[in-house]
Image (cartoon, rainbow, N blue to C red):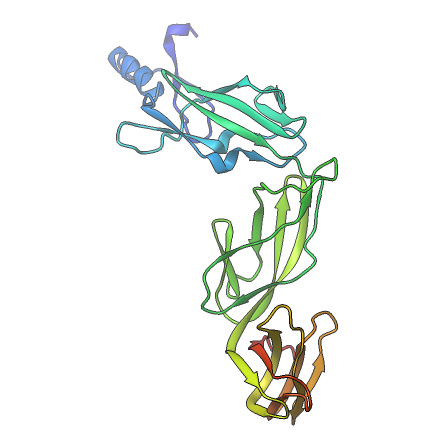
Length: 299
């Protein structure tokens, strides 16, 4: 077939043109060619958060920049090229960038006649772990997830772009990079930083009590507990004074936490009480008392 009897049709979503036989008037050929050129970008918007690179291998920068038209709407099929302007912390490998060390690299993005620049922050992570569960209070504001990480030289990495996926979103859900409590319960979060992936337990608890308690020697106070699983903690209001009152329970199966001083885990079948009492012959004590209801794990 003669070349002039063929044309290319746009397939913007898949990014691959296909060949078809020309069966329309010649004037439509010009219209089709102009349409395939796409809308010229008016500006480029760079997502600075997406320029934090924790991977040690090559990464794409496609999600870091968006082409916008004159109305401020994204252009999905825009062709955006990029190149390293300055910096030696990374190298360009075809259409990907690989961080070789800790540092910053200046990158220039180009789409047609418009340009934009951004700073890629190379913060490679070789290892990270989360040893403690993520505990949230129902009704509280979304909070960041602390992810202790190390670079290849064993130094702490403080700037990270973690990908977090909550398995049971009826318990907690992600709001950007923050985790938000939904309802009391337990679930697991898969956390990825660079090429490393781990998991963390997420527990959402109901706040029951949070108040300051001052007790004179031998003075005592008691609080009721309904059926359920509770965690009771006492923290001295004076950081220099580690004195705690005596603790006991009635019709509640309470055991001290093996990891946290001044904390008890209590299981109540129907109803019970717990008591705090100042020690005889000792100075008065002042603590911040917190009681939360844990997810019920009993079968």
